[in-house]
Length: 324
Length: 275
Image (cartoon, rainbow over all chains, first blue to last red; front, side):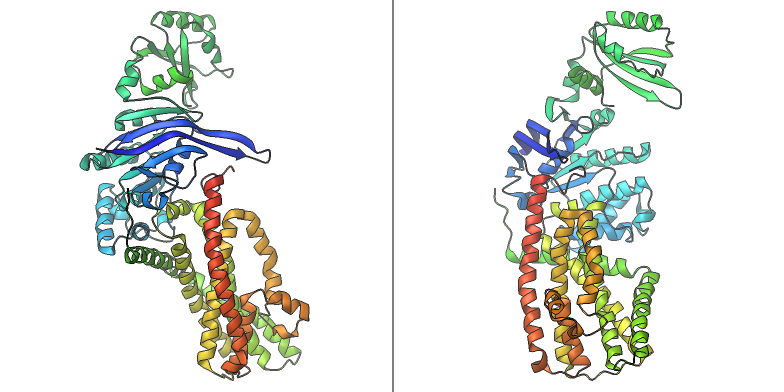
């Protein structure tokens, strides 16, 4: 098996706004993705994930450094790379609303030179796999968000690319649609050892389920890169605590100042008026300290449990905060 | 690693892409019958106003023919300006453009497909405008040489759509600014191109300004042949000028597209919305 994607000190700057403020989207990124891998790129919005994908799919030039897809330079051999690569971006629905799902897929297949017979066979195959054959003749603008995204994914597969870039492919999808998409991607890579998927997501559970390896990225820098198991193993000596407490307008940033707290994330639930705090602690002793502090502040703890480390905990340990 | 493909394979790939893009436009543009009805009826209402004004002013009867032919050709100009020039911008907004750029095809194949599809759709509407306009206002033609008229018509379309290809890159780069600029120029272009009257009636300097548009020469040539009965020797200058437009505009469109792509990849204009 060879290398599907390689980046060497890949850097990309942008100038933003009238003041031409310099934004460092990618900062000396070094990555190597092997053929046959589902490789996850995890990070919050604005971390540089999409910029990296744009460079790899040849729609953006690097400021410095180099990037290779199947050994080909993204700058010098962009035309060649386009034969092997495909992109699916979640939340986008490329195509024409006035055309049916089937017609849209046929159109995109023609951009890759597929004879209509082959294209129609693949359209049928992916419509069956993604369970939207019943909507084949429905105009795209009448499809629900979930079905539009299935159509988008089928479009990404239609050219049978060697490298498929999935940029937040399950963004905003219902549980069932997201599960179907994840299953199809895993099956597709499993079937052919030369297929490679680069997945960007901020759903840590999705990355844990799908990826052979993940890289964590923040502010354009790769913070860690390994298998999910190895990344989590590094936290075995730490304690991870999940607390549900009433939402507090002033927030819980004071937790950061507490001794033994390595980092935390907070998720507010509007419907219940509660906040879930995920804390990464130096050790289990910290749990008692935190509990006491919360009681002293007069806050009621709705629930508290010690959890096994997840990729989100790894992320918290690296940057001191969660993704949200 | 070398993966170069043969010329014929490349040609087939790009022809498929151009055909598919034209197909999208033809099928999409004719799927809603109401659109076609509006696109035929509204221009006829506009040209009716001019016809009635000319009749009230006792203008020569050939002015009615001028107006009907102008109305027919106006459909192409509007198609070039709003559907051709603005199309890449909309493709960007809908997320299609990224996939055109990632596909292993020439960007000119997409533009060619858009132009062909637009030309086919608009020809259907233009023929309807011509037939209905001619019937309603009882226009009489003095056709000099139908082949010459057809030649000028085809050359005008090629030049017009080449201009549309060039505009599409500009629209893409400058987005809404280009959109507003086109809006600003729409009515003056109607005026100087002489859609509803012979351009020779305009002051000399306006005629010179109008000569930068292929439509001015195309429309004048077609009118000369179909209404004034001119033969090939009477419109050869029109033909030469249109050929010159094509020779300049097509390579310029190709260059413009390549320039746009280079700049956009460098500055991130195609991929980022906050730039």
